[in-house]
Image (tube, rainbow, N blue to C red; front, side, top):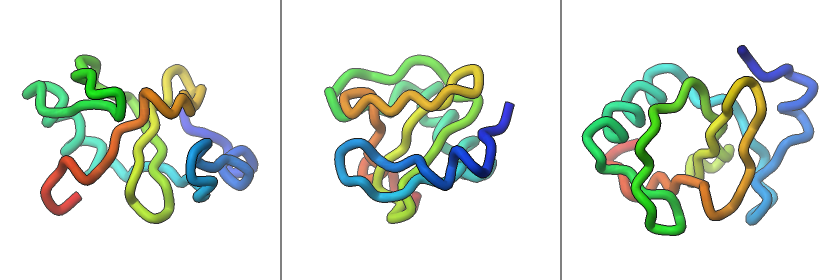
Length: 88
């Protein structure tokens, strides 16, 4: 399930207020591979254990938010910082 463009137009990171966009499939695959290898932590330093069906990323490419069943989970403590990945 994809997020509607109208909703994407108004969504932003709850912490930085940077606009969000859909995470492309190539980077989602890379993220899920790292999750499967237990190499991903959220900003609360908890290991992310569930692969993501889809995700949003800030337009500055710094923070990722999960989308579950078409609903963005914009909880700051569950965000995934991209700094933990090489060349993300």
